[in-house]
Length: 232
Image (cartoon, rainbow, N blue to C red):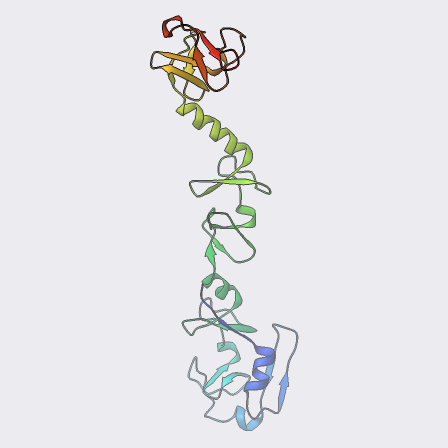
């Protein structure tokens, strides 16, 4: 972002102008400048913009920088100015043009941000009204999540996470006890490559409770009878 120097004509000119007998200042944006007769009719007072001799109201920045009132305009949009900024490239700009020049673009609508802005956890900036969920487009005013550098509300993030988990789920075999499918997202116990159990299907042969942690073979491995450590 560039830095600009700001000047308010109501205060700046009263300090910068020499040989002034009368300065009439109205409300902001309606200022007026009058100088003595000898300055008004002095042929050395040439407008820096049009190079013509100034014989009426004039704007004086320095002794070398004088303008007809009607010639002193924004160098970007050509509007009349009651205050101005000096940009980094030495141009005199009105407030709107200076703001646009120094603005950043909204990550949502891609238009310049001239007022308040929001910055998300990924460092992207938004107009306050543009900060919305990428999925449902609802305005985000609470918790949110960043996916691929874009914001999502909690509800849509949960839905996308469930969908992602479903897409990544696959069967890795049948339970040796109940004969139903074992999914890679399901807690399981693998005794051997051909002997897998849902975790809640592997139970102690003696107490019939679900086996937690280590277990032992009751007779021999062919019996498929397993006991918990308490019953061993």
